[in-house]
Image 1 (cartoon, rainbow, N blue to C red):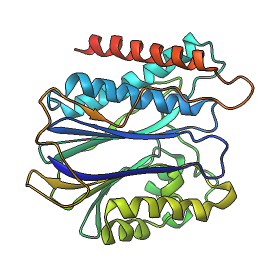
Image 2 (image 1 turned 180 degrees about the horizontal axis):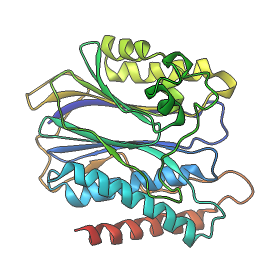
Image 3 (image 1 turned 90 degrees about the vertical axis):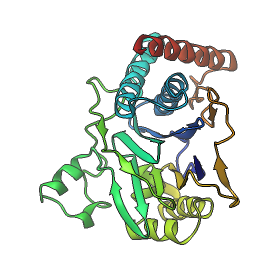
Image 4 (image 1 turned 120 degrees about the vertical axis):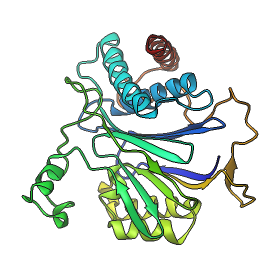
Length: 306
C-alpha cells in the first residue's frame, strides 16, 4: 500500500482552532479523519479531539492489519465518538455538550469508503474531475436539493451555517456512509473543513490538486482560503492523499507500508485534550487527567464492541 499525504490547518481570524485532523495506517489499511468543533457551542475543540481519538483507538484495535467490515466500522466508530463526547460532558459537568462535525475515510484493498456528519467534506478526484463528494448535512443543502436555493448562494445564503447533524447533540447522529469506491493510482482524496470549501470555488480546489502534488496543493489551498477570509476567516483545515496503489514507487514523499509488521500501527493522531480559552482553562494536571479519562473511556467502549 503506497500513498502520498499532507495535512495542514490555519487558525484564521479565530481565538481558538477547533479543527482537528490526522491519519493512522497499518500495512494494509489507512484511516483519514477530520473534525471541525462547532464554534457555536463551548469547547468544540474537545469534541473534535475526542472524535479523532475514538476513531484512531478503534482502528488500532480492529485493523489487523485491515478492517473486516469497513462500513460497519465507520458507523460504530462515529457513533461511539458521539457517546464518548456525551460521557465527557457529563463527567466534567459541562453546562453544554461540545459538538463537532466529522468526516472519516477508510482505504484498504484499493478501495475507499467514507462517512460523515455535518459539513466537513470529502472530495474524490481523478484526472481533473470530482468523481464524488459528500453532501453537507445543512439546511442550505436541503434547500438546494429541492430547488429552493441555488449553488451560487452557498456563500451568501442566511442559512448556510445551519447544520442538522453532528456528534455531541441531544439526538443520535445520522451517519451517512458512501458506497465502496475503487481507487486507481493517481486518485486524490481530500478531507476539509468548511473554512476551506466555503472560501474557494470547487474549480479552484480541483485545479490545485490536479496541477501539483498534495504536498504543494494542500498548504496553497489552506493559505488561499485563510487569505480570502481575512480577519474573519474561520479555522481552515485540509488533509489529502494521492493513492499510489500496491505497485512499487520510488517517488519522493510516497509512504510505503509494505515493510510494516502486521500488528503495527503508525498514526499522527496523538492523545491530548485541547486547552480551552478563557479564565476557566484547564491547568496541566487537569489536561493530563482528561487525556487519561478519554483513553480509558475509548478502550472500555471499544472492548464492548468486539
